[in-house]
Image 1 (cartoon, rainbow, N blue to C red):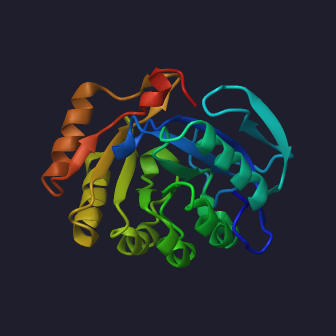
Image 2 (image 1 turned 135 degrees about the vertical axis):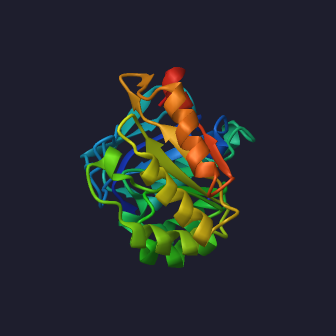
Length: 253
């Protein structure tokens, strides 16, 4: 199946691989991860590289753990044909394509051309820091689910961009949306309450995920504190869950 006719567009990618989603409401689902280069933020807890690289690494087969190098920028036709072959060789194993980063919406112009084609293969799941609502708007018709962050200062080392998050959530709330907040020992109850209040105000039916920060392969917050923070959030926004980064515990990307 040839790639659908679209203008030639290329993107800066870090890696493309097949693995199990380890975060949020899709935990346990098999996805194709397309990690895009670039980010508009610099969070202290970030554990993934996002600076542009000369070559993107792409698995030679879904889940093999063996990678080939493809020069950047990567053309839509190249990626589409690889993923088409994956779906033909292993039909039915993938839930969706997860666009992650970095921040995928930094390359929103390219995604405007890519998503209609990639969505012919699988549904599109966007993982985002939830700050670039203007970039999101034209892409929404081509996105099936959104996992957005709320960035707390105790974890990022910077002020929370509340207005940006509010604008983003107001736009994304009808797209099978979930909101993630990374929390640690440094996180205050007030921070979590503020996040819960914003979500409940803008999107009362959207689940709020409290994700304990992982450092050196371990959860860096006590069970007692997790319970306390969930209690404080749930008094404001009942749809709140604690879900750690499960892929870290089973040694997956």
